[in-house]
Image (tube, rainbow, N blue to C red; front, side, top):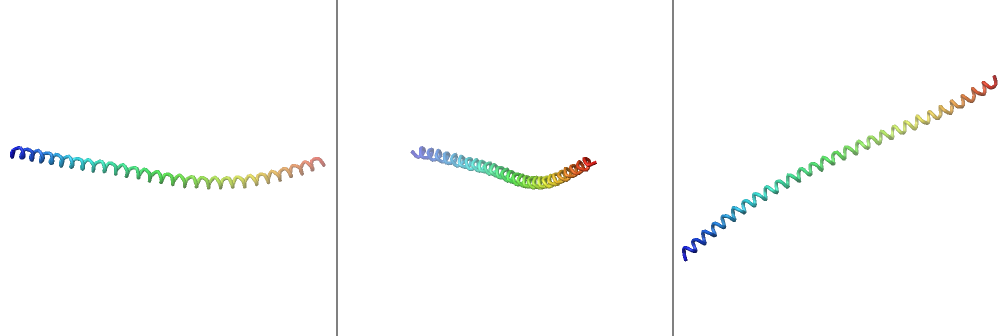
Length: 104
């Protein structure tokens, strides 16, 4: 009976040792998985930061382009008004010259 108890004790010790080894492996594996997840999260956050930076740059470029377009549109409108005024003056000059020619 003592021998059976000794054998049972050895078996239990062996099982405890195996469980401790399994636990150590599981903890190591869990640490590895957590490290991988943290790396993935860090990379994802960096991608988000870069995307936000790109978005901000694009917004600034868009704002600049919009302002340039507004300035150019304003300049074109001003030039168009000048050309229309010159056109009116030229039409009046042509009418005046035609009147003079018809009196000759």
